[in-house]
Image (cartoon, rainbow, N blue to C red; front, side, top):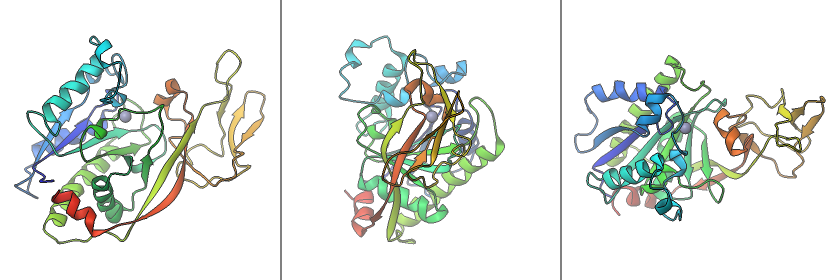
Length: 301
Ligand SMILES: [Zn+2]
């Protein structure tokens, strides 16, 4: 893959405003790292950003499913039209083609700075391993969940999400903005170094593989009937085993994790996932060995 342009998207969710601030700052800077690679900075969902809402009609970051049968039935859906526009314009076969997409998000969960990749694409592994190597960032590998599909970066041959939190929606936080600035600047640097054979990939990549999500406990009427347990709050990426508390219901009962496998929960209590009936997602740790082919594929094929 000859990398000529890299698309940096912020505001795919209109109420995640810190990455937009960060990229507006970056846009002003010259790209001193690599004159051969152009970086394009685009607001994913400008109308939702203007209104301070996550989306207008539906979640833009679930609207990039080319197999989505509903696309033709949704001519008036703003996000479906916006997704189609972004792919037609900046997709690999678009008018202004970008080979890589980086999608910047924030979360209300205590995830710290993390990377999300979708499925097991070698080019994504290559890119993610550069950042894990430099900063030790955790990687959430999202795969095989039919309830959650159509993510933006999947519409490009290579791409990842940078997810940083905790921060409230529509709230500017300079610490969060700084983290985006550091990571994006480093990403540009690392890609340039890799291209010029100045760095090697780490031998292994540690990923947290998506196993599924669980909902809050609910009453028969569907109302939420349990809080994230005080011992589980803010414990994203922390090992959880059978018997550990997950929720505290309105009667004061503790609901515990009953699975046999050790898991690492993420997106604990994420505000935006309430509407998706997700209280947290479970992951399992996996070590993937890197290979020189990753770099070959990244730049050559
Ligand atoms: Zn988001």
